[in-house]
Image (tube, rainbow, N blue to C red):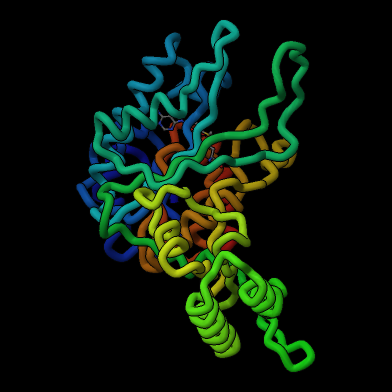
Length: 354
Ligand SMILES: C[S@@+](CC[C@H](N)C(=O)[O-])C[C@H]1O[C@@H](n2cnc3c(N)ncnc32)[C@H](O)[C@@H]1O
């Protein structure tokens, strides 16, 4: 259902209370629509505004400003509203590309992110590098090809925001038993560590006994499935992964005092990193629209930071990718865009799903 701006407030309110899974689309300027929304109704927002100075969308809109500072200022006005309409537990994921002006890479994403933190009080939790792997054609002879974009994860408040890390963990590999010995997911059986403890001259006899007992205990935890995998760092044996300064690192202190420590892997699998390799959408397949983002880009954000009964917002929804993934993952959503043409595509895409 595409609605227009005049009854946006009532429609969003009504949808927030008892909307079905089918997304609600509103045609209008993001700032105008958001200004009409009540505060604190959305759980989650993910969006990708037009690039600055690169593309012309139907009906004009953001991105056509002559100066990048005006573009940033227009986005800041919209994001202040996004912050207001988000719940206290809310998250905002912003995908934004950079642009060149007169040979200078402008640094739009970080200029904007810093203002959001300093002027609007957002807390930045992650800066993700979206590696588009193949990128577009590039005929320049004096710089590298650009294949990444930024995705920022902001929260309204540094504590108490919704986050379900277990929803995004990769399936853990299983512990195996080989020749009667427990072997962890990545092949750690403890035999190498036992040898290192036995033969090292960097541990005293008492430290060796403690290290051996702790290792046995860790192998029992692996057998029970309490720990999926681990690494043992033994004084003088392994390269450390922390600062050597005891002032900075508790681990450095543990290594000095006890002679060893463990790095444990979560039994439910590991979390994704902040570099995502995701191929861009094939624009040939989509009518009229120049910059849809891939569905995979929205999955981790929605699963991790939107509760199952939560309400999703995308103020520049274009062809509705955020809304489509929200529905696939069982979340209701509201999408705003200036262009009716894109909203019609979005509606077709999402409507066929149900
Ligand atoms: C990069 S596209 C979003 C693509 C979207 N993520 C998708 O997957 O299809 C940016 C969208 O912002 C819309 N837009 C530009 N200015 C706007 C404004 N002031 N208010 C609402 N939408 C606007 C454009 O029409 C365009 O669809």
